[in-house]
Length: 261
Image (cartoon, rainbow, N blue to C red; front, side, top):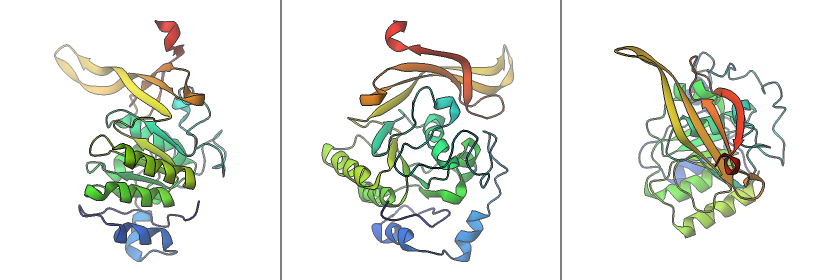
């Protein structure tokens, strides 16, 4: 990494420019307003860890040159974690995209979310992201490729919802930044040539009985495939979220798609 994020939380206005983003990665100490964001009380998260708890058992520290870890529930869909320098597609914006970033955040990675104006800090913390190491850029505007490039230069994982299908020239430029900085780009949307893809192919809500009840949990079938080490296609049922709000396996069966049918 050539630079590091030192801000706890940045919530930008609609007009985000590089003059606003880039100084974030050069500041050693932030002012008292940002410090208050670091002390934000989120009451832990639904995966059973709180910011400051340190890596989860079995996560270990963040490897300098290895893959970024994922939540245990996603481990069999992404064996080895999120490869540095790669693009991972998560389909349309959903809790799955946040879950993909949560494991790295718990392990101590700086993360950023761009292009998701409806995302709140509490929601991100609830699925596992540490708000003390989180940058939010709700609407990067028409200059979103430059903004994302700056974020990738300072953060180990960037979660992006692009405004549409990215042109080939934009993809090549951002992929070059990824390779140089060793980060991971998680895309909620389309990205031709992504190294890994995870898609929700089926979903079942629980809690609603005939004529009464409330939604309590969602059980989803996630399909994963990709290129290289991620080429073997797999599926897994997950709670996303579970009855307690956590992300976890809905059963213990992992099926090779090619064998299923």
